[in-house]
Image 1 (cartoon, rainbow over the protein chains, first blue to last red):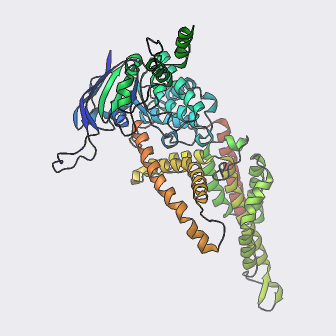
Image 2 (image 1 turned 45 degrees about the horizontal axis):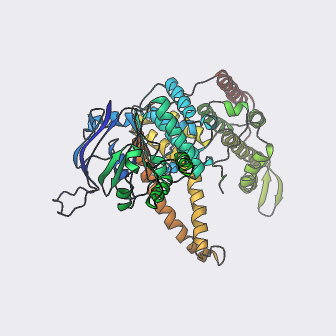
Image 3 (image 1 turned 30 degrees about the horizontal axis):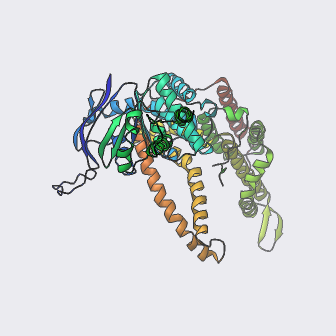
Length: 283
Length: 269
């Protein structure tokens, strides 16, 4: 079932009152995509490609200059729906430090539901549930600044989950984390998608992370370059390289081996697949 | 610098720690007023007994209280000495222009005792209540002020955010100082003025990044449906327990005791 629908989205910052100059640059140009309920989507692209701008359109933080964004049929341009849209699409930002509001973990997680005006007893339930879902329940009485980056980001995710959204959008949630923190956060996201059926849209520039998604959208210079399953997208190594985008290292290795004449028929995405494939070839 | 604790909360478990913070604030105000309404030794004795009881119940080491008294010791000494010489009546000791009277001695004792009680009561509050609880309690206590268009929720939210970000900004200050030192900045030598000037390259980046943080935090809060205090509920409900009612009863007894002592026993002066 379709949950998010982006139709011919054009966007530029600083909408000036006077007629814009002709060469005014759009951050996003003619972007269309649909995302189904329960899907795990990765949006990849360079820094400055406009992928974070896409994220902010999904919960009405930004409104399209032209085109439409619908969240479960609700038009984000309609201000009376903004509150409803934001309670259904939670956005997790890049810097975990700057999105925690309260001085105690559980009170921070309660911030969202409190804003929704939910009954105290139910908030308590939701907070406990959310903290358990991200495996941070034991830290509920700690101060945020005593936590590691990965832990803080998980608390930020819990703060969104406690609002019981249908969809979580994560804007480069792992960019500021060390490898351990990154693994923690990614495991959490995957678990939420699989076990709780939450639609996930993850913005990232790590191709290794994009591989775990059901579908990948590649954005370059504000335009949709290609999309499809990770297999479909990352098999187009030449196209991605031409736009100076990486492919997962395992894919790249086999791509280069094939270019050197090694007989490899399909490109792997993960290290495990790559190992199995190379074993087959070497046998 | 990372483990800085704001205020002087002393983490441990005691009856006072578990009391409702609203009750603690109201009691503190009442007790301070009470301390200044003691007009004879008997009522002062009642208040002193209360202070001793509070300090003992707080489970906070006496050393902590002495530390907070140390800060004001000079004020206590100076005011007592001044009071010593301001009494009226028959001098019991005279030297040059200084006259010490019985009333002066009493005055000095009372002023000294009152200031000490005041400090001990307020320390007991800050030792046993986290800054977060204090903010929370203040918001709830000041709620009636919304009638006068005072933005109680906004003030409390600002205090909460300030408390949350103090450690973060301290950490950032450390980082910036290290970064500037790595670029050759000298912050330890020179006189006061040079050293204050050397702080400018630390403060400017700190300010810039604080504004960026504030902007990002605002976005994050909006993402979480924050719309100000209207229609907002709270997870933590402050409820008065049995111990709070007991505390109230004891406070009322003490107040009654002080008033009775003042009425039925002769006043000094």
